[in-house]
Amino acid sequence: MIRVLYVATALDSKNSIAAELTKALSDARGDLQIDLVVPHTDTIDKGVAPLAKRLVHCQAQIDGSARDISVLEGRSDAHVRTFYLDATEIKSGLSLDDDAGIIATAAFAQGVCQWLINAPVEYDIVHCEGLLTAMVPLYLRTICAESPRADHAKTVVTLNGTENKATVDMAWINRLGLPQNLTSSEGLEFYGKMSILKGAYLYADKLAFPNHIVKNNIEKSVGSDIGMEGVLFSRLGNLETIRLGIDTDKLNPRTDKALDANYDDDDMAGKKTCKNALTKSLSLLKNRPVALFIGALNAESGIDLINDILDDVMAQNVNLVVVGRGDKVYENAIQQWHDDFKSQMTWIKDANCADIRKLLAGADILFVPAKHECGCRLHQIAMHYGCIPVVRALGAMANDIAPVVDIDANINHENGFACANYDSDDFYNIAMDAIDLIQTNQWKTICHNAMTKNLSIAETANDCIKVYDALK
Image (cartoon, rainbow, N blue to C red; front, top):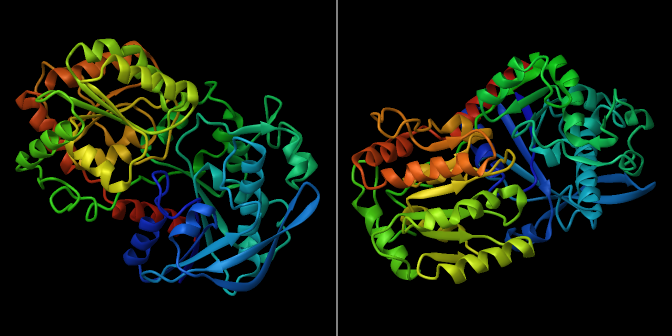
């Protein structure tokens, strides 16, 4: 029996695979016992049945004072127990963007460590999902180092890539109860600040990236300046690949009841129906390409690249649908887009999961010009719904997308469009390539390739199990 504590920032969100993956892990191997722990935030409160309070008492040391943390247990699902860490500091959610978010992130990480040390069972592996959980191995190997249970547990941190160093002011080392010696360059210091990413590099037993390309690039970059390379190159033997995946049974255009018509890669007539219904409901141009952007309206999302090429895209009579909220300056820009291109552009500020699936079913292309790697699997859902991604080749997107290189050549295995650089000219070129092909037979092949790409969460579970077995 291998006991795994899976640490996530949420149960179901665009950046979390916790609910799906833990179930897939439980289904994949009978000798895995999976417990899931997440923050008990205000948003979770709205969708969770009454929770039972566990007797284990946890505390976090923040700003020199102890903060009480309660452990709440939810209903088991497919042999996966879910625990929620509840504290005033955690309620508003985890982030590294402001003081409250940093405190919440640290309090949650310390609470996870306290649960691991005092839980009724001993965990063999702690799997931390994403950068916001990366403080868990840091605390386990520093302030909890004397605990036999902390020493026993092996840690895995899944990261989207190497770009986001996640730096905060150096004063946080003391404020978060971490040892003073971590202020040195041998510790968490990175250009005068404290780096959360460096903490993961130093203290996790395994570092997992969402595709082999990130891992291979790191291994080939010895001697290059990629940031923290001294630490990273010393851990080359600890790098792993855990591919992201989706629940292709639930997210299936053949059976999705939210769609105006169902379809699959062999019969795409239903997708045309979905597109016609979408353009009619949004009062957009008929029988024109539909491009879609879904995400936060901020600098990190890459919305600036779309802004740079907007006039040229719209000159091709393309319909554009933007979904999301964000910084005021970007919201004002999106409103201006709508004012300039009323018959071609719609801004949807809020959309639920069913709405997003309807949008993907009705759209031809999905723009993902992200500035940094992200854990979002939206491009995978889009591919499964025959909405072709036009992206920067980052993170899981670099693994999943075989980009079209020459639109005049035969299409074989290609399933999307990608550029390497954060550059408006490069993004313009791939966007125009995609638009040029939409009405061709080549496009049908691209859609077929995208929809039949194996993106199953079961493959993610298999990758995890290989890592767990290696650690055990």
